[in-house]
Image (tube, rainbow, N blue to C red; front, side, top):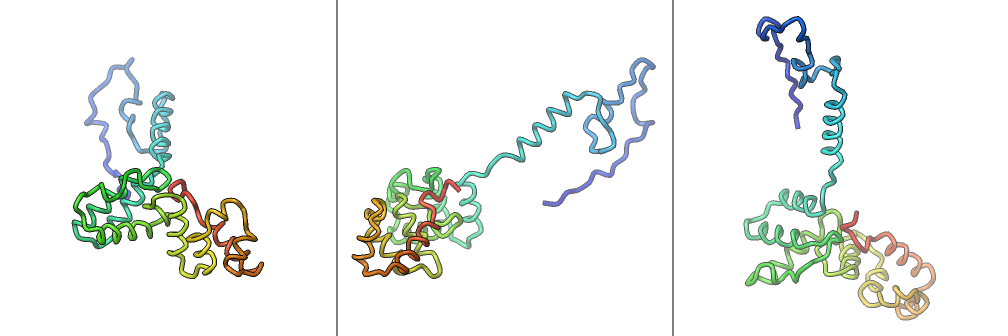
Length: 197
C-alpha cells in the first residue's frame, strides 16, 4: 500500500464567517490529519482511537490466509474453484468439515487429490486433512528431510505413540535409542492442529 499525504490547504477566506460567540475551531479541523492540532472533544478522539485499534487488531482467519496463498498460484479456473471450496470447508483446526468429494460432485478424484495436496503445502503446513493423524503425516511428508523412522511411526504406529509405548515402537522398527530419540524429537516439532497457529 502507498500512503498518499493530503497536502491541500484551506484558505480562511473560503470558510463561512462566524459570529464572535461562535469560535469552535474544532469543527474546521475535526477530520484534520495535522498531528499538531489537538481537538477539544476528548470523546471523539477516544472513539477514533478505539476504531483504529480495533481495525488493526482484527486477526486474519485460517481461510483468509489460505485463500490469499491460493490466489498467488497460477491455476486454471477449475482448480481455483476446487481449492476455494476445499478451503472454505476447513474447520479452525484445519480439518475437513464435510467429505471433500461431496463439495463438487462429479469432480475428478485425481484433480481433487492434486488440489488437496497443493493446499496442504500452504502455510500452515498440514491443513486440508481429515484429522490430526493425517495432518502429522502430511507435515512429515512435506518436510525436506524427515527421519525415515518418524514417517513409519506416523504411518503405522501412531496408536502406540499416543499410548507412550516407545520401547514397543523401537522393537517393531528395530530402532536404537538414538534413532528413536531423533524420530520422536522430529514428531514433537510438528503441529497436530495446524489451523490453530
